[in-house]
Length: 232
Image (tube, rainbow, N blue to C red; front, top):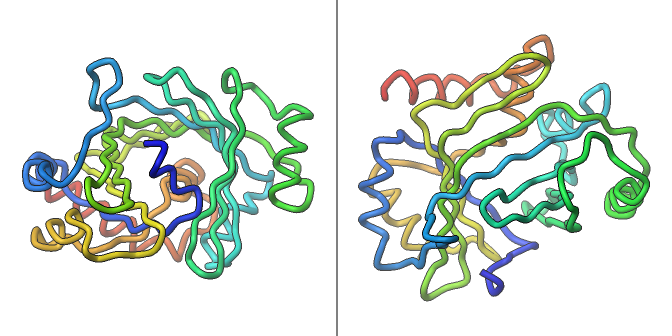
């Protein structure tokens, strides 16, 4: 895992029916190692996402702005680790992640955390917690190339006194230094008629939990997700 942290990387995402997951895992098993933590191969994660009062980060993504940011606390529950993480999407399509270790997810951003966020983003932001994102993740590492593959299931969101869930779905993300279609997963998922699909769990959660926000540009994504869940 240390050799494939890929804090500066490209991400290629895929969304597919949960019933396809077992078949895909069986087909790719010879090409990947799987992360095992205390004999568990599916790990629990939870994240608390922050944004400005007027949802600046959400609208940057919705409006297609490049050089955008997301700020979250993430707890890797089975590993006993917790980080404050900032993800920056560049105008070259790269994802750069920077993080600092924390003891637990706090109720608010303290002075040290605010200083870290300001140093990474380049300006001070008044951030408030917006919602929780919880899921289970399978993590795999390619045996022959520098690639990490994550597959998320049981995805649910909580915020603004509401809950929302992506039922009967898996979201896979191929993380590489640069896009390499020689990836065994990419080849096999394509064979199963699944194409790359850009999706942000943060934005899907925000649009679901705060339905009065403008979400026109995400409607095609919701249509596909709804179709996947209906077909399942």
